[in-house]
Image 1 (cartoon, rainbow, N blue to C red):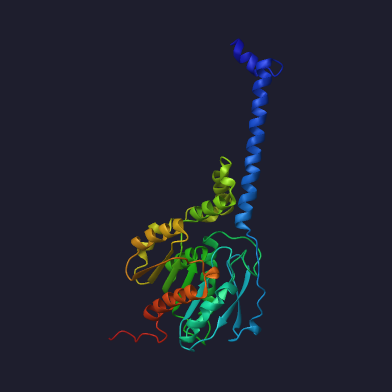
Image 2 (image 1 turned 180 degrees about the horizontal axis):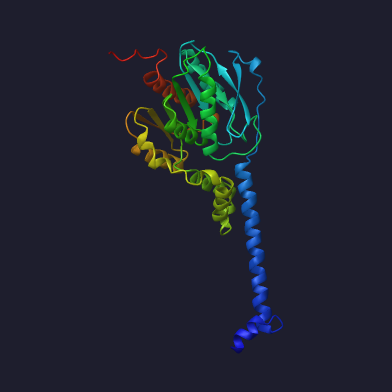
Length: 314
């Protein structure tokens, strides 16, 4: 009892040691929380480096299409016209990228008469704000499809989607609820946003500080509370039965390649797999970029022909 009394008494030697250690512990915890908050902010509000490309300066001048995502945020993107009755292929850039990084991918698709659409997600390129690492981006993609389907200068009943990491996750989630998405190609996708958050936190080097990754995950969950019950893709991808799927893995991103492989293995037919040395599209040299484009193009040619299939015989 005397020991406990001394411990509770801040004037005793033992009490001074105890309260001193408690104070240091609280300071350390506050410091870790502050570091975690700064790291999380850096991940969810990534540095934007908009290329500032004027669509009027592009060879095949695109139409500028505006649409509104859930929550009222306004977006605009570029629609590169193809055959009037052909479907639309939407290109969804990856984390830290932007639509202008994908301009070279547009040319072979457009040359085969596809309509092609590119835009920037929130927190990327021309769009300020933050990223949700997938759930919000999927909702934005669905709103875009609704907008494009109203147009009469393209086939609004058939869409293809290509996406890398962040864009790939959004593409698969959107395809789960949108039957107009007939073919989806994903590159270096992840099973659930927390996995991608962990990768980005690790890249900052802050994981050397204990509990930073844990607090960052908790902060992400609080900021995206509405999507807290969203199941992992691995538990849902099995329902993508009629949708054609291409899973692209890059040996330069082994963690994401493994996630992509596991999703491929759980996906039903029709499905295809491509394993490439590198898949960071914006940094690929010309020959590797051409090979990458051919993989994507051939997939869409097979599974999303420009001519609509004939109606089933009665």
